[in-house]
Amino acid sequence: MGKKDREQEMDSAAPGEAPETPGHVDEVGAPEPEEDAGPEAELAALQDRHLRLAAEFDNFRRRTRRELGDAGERARAELAGKLLELMDDLQRVAETPLEGTTTDALHEGIGLVARKFAKVLSDTGVEPVNPVDERFDPNLHEALMMTPTDDPEQDELVSHVVLIGYRLGDRLLRPARVTVYRHEAETS
Image (cartoon, rainbow, N blue to C red; front, side):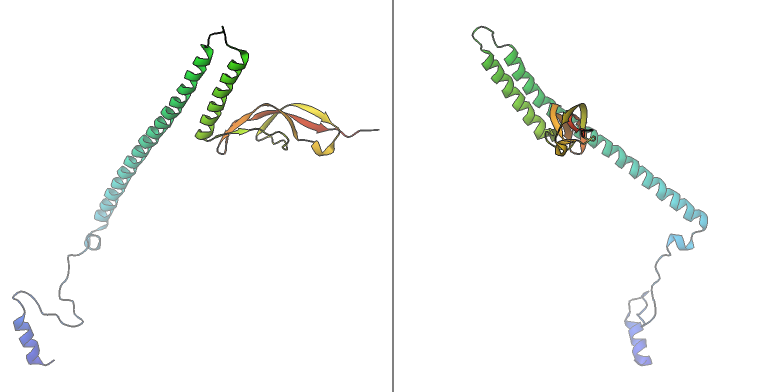
């Protein structure tokens, strides 16, 4: 490009606007505040940013607590509704007139309520711990008694469940109360 061409290009540019020149920055933007600002201004900007982040985090924490509390309330209300249905069933069984009612009918009614209650627990995620013929585990079972056995293979197996235990996920709600076989070698 010759000198004449450059002059024509400069003349054709809008007034107040510099023509582009290869390898040259014609426009310089406003300097970044951190570049020209002194350490005090940078410190103030960082403190402001810190305060804003702290406030955002505090709001997030409050909102999360509120949402967790609401979720807990909803879960408790749902469970209470299911338990109230079971209470109604138990009241109906209890209010059954004794005249003309057999023990078989009462037994059947109580069995129906117990099965419904087990279903509510299962739907809630509560699982029974019923370890008959399983190896005794002190993390899940509570030994009440030892039952002697002659069979060494039965040693430390659960022989009888006195009271079924329950767990919710990985959390043990109540250990199973059991009797455990204990093999004692004969000494002669």
